[in-house]
Length: 135
Image (tube, rainbow, N blue to C red; front, side, top):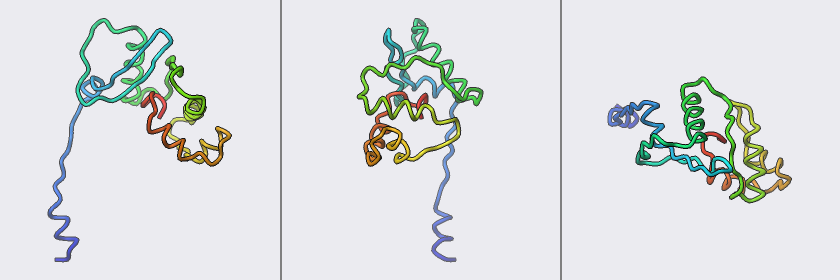
C-alpha cells in the first residue's frame, strides 16, 4: 500500500446537518430608519425577539427564500451611509452582477475607475457589511 492509500484510510469525514431555520437564527441584521446597516453571521444565535422591525422581517424572509432557492435577487433598502465613496462604488457594481456569475477583483477595480486597486477591492469585499445580499 502506497502513501496515498495510508492517507485515505486515516481521513474521517464528518457531516454537519443544519436546518435553514437554525442557520437564520445566526444572522444578525442591524437596521436604522434609513434601511439595513449591516447583515452579519454570528456564532451564537441572536435573541428571538417577536417585535422585530418590518424591515428586518422582510430581510429575514428574503434571506430564507434565497437559501431555499426561490429568490435570486434582493429588494431591500441598504444604508450605505457608513461606507466610503470607493466602498459604495464597489458594492453597487457587485450588486449588479447577475445571479450565478462571478467577476474578479480586477474587473471591479476597473469599474470603479481605479484600475490597479484590486487589492483594495478585496478588502472592501472582506468587510462587506451586507453579507449574502451583496455577495
